Length: 208
Ligand SMILES: [Zn+2]
Image (tube, rainbow, N blue to C red; front, side):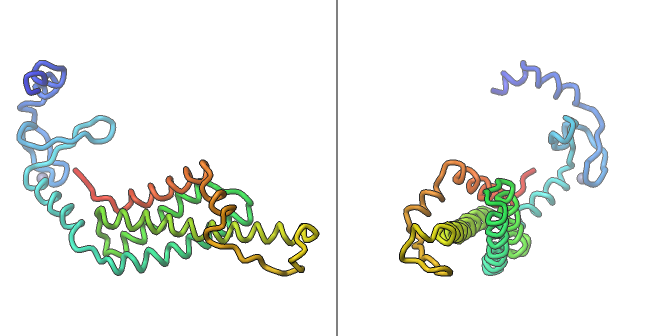
């Protein structure tokens, strides 16, 4: 692999940087390119870090995944799920359509709440918590949305439902086949997956 690298076009790039003086992007210390760690930055420009800065950034990143406040993450995450879920419900009921962007917004809101609630920590546990809460928020809102539309349909078509009087509300089970079918439509699943994915990405541990 090393041999291959040395003969490949990368070797030319690396060779071109040897002995070149570069600045550490953090502390502006000057040094030789080969003694610094380089990362690909924006616009294909290499970004350099001196050893000290790399070590301190690494430990800061490591620290971010340590001892998250789980109770805080759950608490704030649930609050965001309720607020986001209610917003999802009203937007869907009002527009009478499911909008993918709302899933992104919901995932973002819950992901941020989990991260902030955990005392600005990151890591896999928080990622799963954020994604799980997003899916629960969607499931519960979708249930109320379905119930809303079924009841609206009944009220508009009362002659088809002899058991119902004006204002009667149908009691729909969480496991109602119609609800589950509606919930698990391909486009629906795609939208929920997007929401969960966005939430999952927000408390993700950083890397350099
Ligand atoms: Zn530095």
